[in-house]
Length: 271
Length: 302
Image 1 (cartoon, chains in turn yellow, red):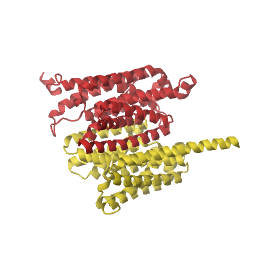
Image 2: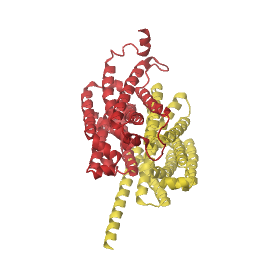
Image 3: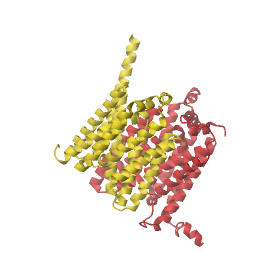
Image 4: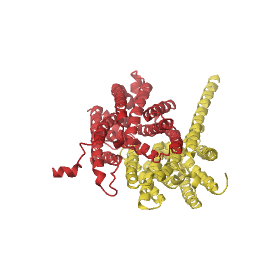
């Protein structure tokens, strides 16, 4: 379980969990859950296009995830974010359907892009993940304070000279960067579950931003590690375990928060 | 007639699959458009899309246990809607997160079902049909059931229209007037789940989302008043569907492969294009990022 190819899997999955935990925290905080779903899934169309042209799928993923981020941010200027996200997303997938219909032997590869191939990670694939992952985490750390302010208190941020739209674009671009290199490894669906479940759970456990982000990373790591171990033993897909474990953490977090609120209420009543 | 032949490939009006596709496509387009107007107004696009994805998961689950996929779609769609409602879909911010968590878990299940499905019956490309669907390969036996359920969802939304509109635009006023806001929201979410699940069966999850949101968002930008918005949305949805089917039929002879371009590509392009066209009009209302222009328009007296 810890030898040869599996070692690559552990390293890659750990990196992905850290990235997902960090970006997911802001995705949940900003209410950009839909974008977190749309960018990785829409980017999949880019990989289809790249394979049609005989290019590296990374290139297609990068182009489409950046286009998705720009599309969402651009359309959001004039309409509701959820409508902007939907239209950008369906357009990307529509183009993906066209690419897929043009190529004949894509179905298997598409399955891998959606659901991931985490047990077949090669050593060459690990390096770009580490590099791009470090880049996107660094970008979030650099932007942490303004991003935090503009996510929590957009009006105050605006008054202090932090433009909300530019922050939104910057955040979506980081998400696109994180997506384009993680999707070939873990798949679009898993990337999404890993961004949302742990971050949402962390948010319900604590209100302190630094702690919540750390917790989000820790929960993402636990989710992925447990998922890989069970998946390795049972041969069932990793995506299933990650999705379910993430949801269980979220429900646990919600239950904990509810219990704490109730305790707090009885305590204040007693006092 | 020669010119006409360039527009419509011969055999279009005589083809059986095309007839079914047009009929079913029309029902789906109208239902999606009407439900979609409320979806856009309530800001539940993400839920609309998620329910489509989740319903298709139910489809693959039903396929796995050998039940008619139709029941899988309905059961998963309705179950997910109930679950989202339960874990707090009412608050706007928490709502998307709740939707995301349910979607994440459902997609995990989808991965499992597809894995078990390919393991036991080796249907490669099943993930594909589920995601993108195909309107040309409908089986006629399911059509009546599909249409009945679609009309049921449509009927629910139409019956609830007034209270739904009020509680979508101003939940507080609705509550003050004695509208059970939460129950109305839950009923609406059920109708959304049913209509989305059905259109996902028929045309795939992608196209279902496109028809739900695209025409409605466009209509809310151009039409004054909710009734007109619904009418415009239905018209746009039907037009995009028909034109998409026609173009897809024509495209059987187009390069590069001569196998036909997918309907979903055409419909999505038409729907998105239609929406972008509304951007050409100069915005005559003050631009505001916080207040939604759609709601403002609906609120304004017709």
